[in-house]
Length: 295
Image 1 (cartoon, rainbow, N blue to C red):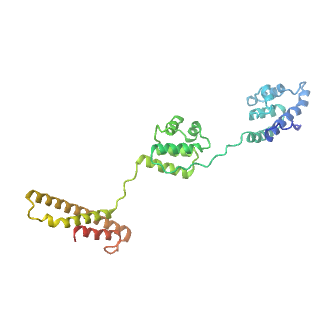
Image 2 (image 1 turned 90 degrees about the vertical axis):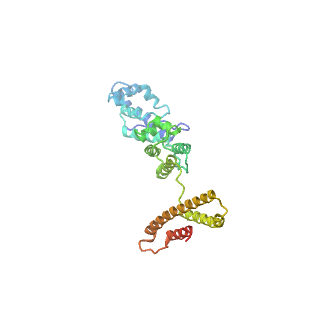
Image 3 (image 1 turned 90 degrees about the horizontal axis):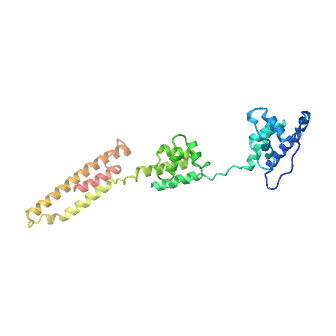
């Protein structure tokens, strides 16, 4: 027998919940003829006894079945036991319960995943990780630990998110995946982690600076040569000037050898094996090198 409609919707409750409650009440009324045929009345205890007879999956008390009609959302197990005890269709009960559950507990709207900016310190890494966690679908430590796998326990996550431990690359990757951070946020986290762990990059090397410094020192030496050659310098001063001159010439030779290697490398990489002399950056360095040597 088809259950009859139940009472009207109560104020403020979702229509889906009212529909489920009405369907359950109608199922109880529809079970009355079968109960009378068995010499009983269709009470909640009668429905509970019938449901329990079908196995442990349907064990429920009469009080629980009564509470299913008090305006609150019952559990799915209660709704199915109610339908089983009343002899109603369980698939219909399951479908109506799912609709009521979505109405009563709508899914939390997730904000857009957070993409960290540039950071270079451990404190910046901690702030970025906590900001990424705040936009995770399930942000609790236990939920993140379950999703991340055995490499990240709740206690480990707590240490990482409070700055008491710096994560490894594998741990940070698992954390980002557990937060459903996305490729862009994960890449930003890993790039910042690399900066924190490895420190700032070394200053760039500018070969031209060597040639320019050599030229400046050569010019200063040329300006000082008349003074260095003055006959009134005593033996000690002359020896000291000679040593300085020898040190300078040695430095120029070392710089020249280094720039010659750079010239060969740049010609092979950028201008090809058939490039002529003086082409590319290496040619510019060679000109400055000749100037530094006084040629």
